[in-house]
Amino acid sequence: MVEHRSEKPGVDSSILSPATILFPNPLMAEKTILVADDNDEWRALVSFWLKGQGYRVLAATDGKSVIPLAEKTRPDCFVLDFELGDMTAADLIRQVRGRFDGVPIIFLTTMARAMMHIPQGCMPEQFVIKSQSSMELLAVIEDLLKGK
Image 1 (cartoon, helix red, strand yellow):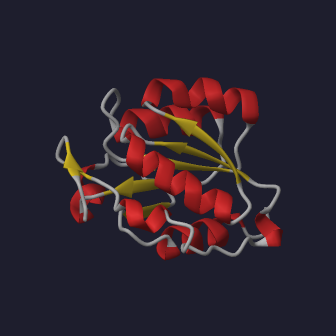
Image 2 (tube, helix red, strand yellow):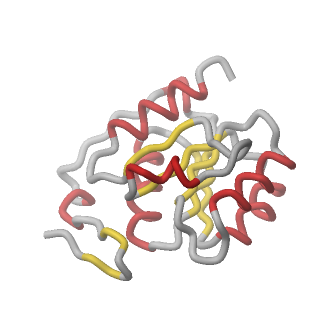
Image 3 (cartoon, helix red, strand yellow):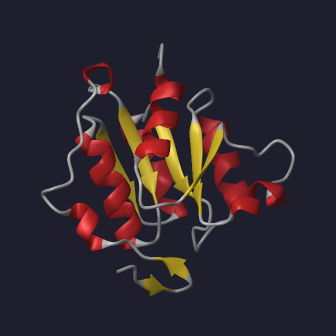
């Protein structure tokens, strides 16, 4: 069953069960990913997926906490909710790029048309549509972090 709160998709809690098997990628074990999502369930789910792959995960609940957390930890990649309640995606990407040039940014979104609403110069490396599967997000992160 999928719950819906605040017009954002919920997370099917059954996918967090012990039956969910993820295989860590030893090549990514030392990488740190900063996840920002104002939806507790999505933030927990994405963190679960990433930890299952051996990544170190830092979690932010809103846009304004991303930069201070990142300055303390220097993440290797940002996974940011496109619809953080306190900041626009464009504002957040400008701040991240201004301080962490070269660190890949992935926007998670429920809207396939989200990329049409990003001003020139504020595009992330990738958009990933929120879904109940970790496969796409994990593949994108691994691809962006190869060779780093």
